[in-house]
Image (cartoon, rainbow, N blue to C red; front, side, top):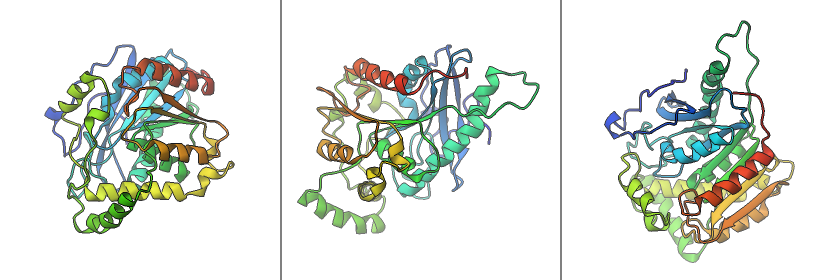
Length: 343
């Protein structure tokens, strides 16, 4: 598998005409293309790196949420590159410009564990292909075999991407130097209503997996920036439909497994060795704030922080206070990732 330095195949489920036009600053290096997962599906990837003369602090793996796609967060990637980080990201199966699985349903989570497998496969691909291409641009005229390039890897996710990211860390297949989670959607408060819904959704997920029965989020609660909604509503790669029964069941099941996993309470576990920053808005009505705070309190990580921004909604990077959010995030990253060698 080789990385592509220009636009490559976008998968069979989204046409080239439906893709977004991005304006990449000339001060950054851009890689995109597709890689295949273990099930033979083509998944779209995107990467952004500082110029070769910039000392690299690390590489950030970004995971998007349900109904979203990886190229909608270019502004965040640019800011991370300004701070000396590379960014690698991909569209989950059934999302963005990636292939659909056999259910042929956009914004659909057929099997959460497969998403964890895909994420681990993408990390391996990025290290073997994207890293290699980024490094070769730094020293294009090697006379001998270059040393293995292994910059610190930082994992992050937004909304559903945080749940996927945490399960990826728990899988133990890759080492992470740090993690930051935005609008964490990792747990729910078990009300009588939710308990009843959970009992119903499991058989429905088997009988009618693609039935869009789970009400979508109120998109007015995502962000207070009207420009965000205008962009989101016209984005051909974003999905605004209700969740399928299977998606709801798989997400809830993943939350339950995370809650029951004792590794998050064991200081010597792989999970708890990773410094973690949780970023949330005080007015987030989409993620369960009380459940998230309870989960955070359980974590045995020696280096952990929960930062709640007053008045901010679910999409912390897109609300009017985004500059404050990014300033806090980049300061946190700089203290844990000193500058290393040029990339």
